[in-house]
Figure 1 (cartoon, rainbow, N blue to C red):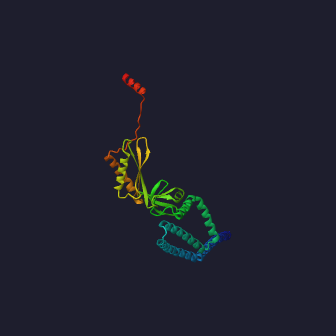
Figure 2 (figure 1 turned 90 degrees about the horizontal axis):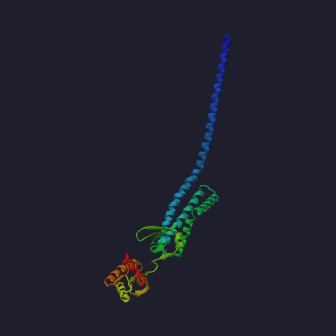
Figure 3 (figure 1 turned 45 degrees about the horizontal axis):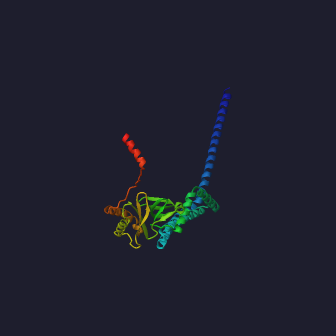
Length: 317
C-alpha cells in the first residue's frame, strides 16, 4: 500500500515537471520566434536605410550646393540687368521669374537623384499645376497682367499714376502686385490684373503739364479786370511758364456767377504746388480789387397780384 502511494506521487510529480518544462519550452520558442521576426524587420529596415543613405546624403548635398549657386547666379543676373538700360521694375520682375524657375528645376533634379521616377514627377507637377491654376485663377490673371504691364510699358518706376481711383508713385512691380506710395506716404498694393484691365492715367510721362483752374466772379464785376488780375498772379508765380502763353477764358455763364477758365503750363513736378498757390493768390487779389466770388443765389420775382394778397394777409393777421 505504501509503495503504491509512493509510486503514484512520484508519477504525478514527474508529469507536473514534464508539463512545466513543456510550457517553458513553448514560451522560449515563442519569444525566440518574435525576437527573430523583429530582428528580421529591423534588419531589413536598417539595410534599406543603409542602401538609400548615400542617395539621400548626395541629394541633400546637391540641394545645398544648388541653393548656393542659385544665389550666386541671381547676383550675377541682377548686376547684369542693373548695368543694362532695362527699367528697374522690369528687371526686378524678370529676376523673380528666373529665381522661381531655378528653384523648380533644382527640386526636380533632387527628386530624380532620390530615384523618384520622372513620370511620377511630371504627373505630380501636372496635377499640381491644374490644382493651382483652379485655386489661383485670380493670381494667374495678375501674373499675366504683370507681363502685359511690363512689356507694354504704360508706366515705369517713379511715375505718378492714377489707377482705379488711387493716385500714387510707382515703387515696384512684383509677380502679382504693383506697389504704389500715395502723397500721404501710404503704401497701396494693386493687383496687376486690375492695372492691365483698368484705365491708367500717367501724370509724369510728359515733362510739362497744364494747370486748369476755374474762378467764378459776379455778373456785376468787370471781366477784363478779373482776367488781368489772374494773369498778373500767373506772371508773379516762378513755376509758371510764360511760353506757351497763359490763357484766361470766359468758360460759362452759371446761375450765380460768370466762370473764368485759367490755363497755364508748368513742369509736371510743379503741378500741385502751382495749383494750390494760384488758388490762394488769385482769391486774395480778387479781395484787394473788389472782385467778388458770389455764393449760389436765387432771385425770386413775385407777381403784383400775389404781392397785394400777401400784404392783405399780413395786415389782417
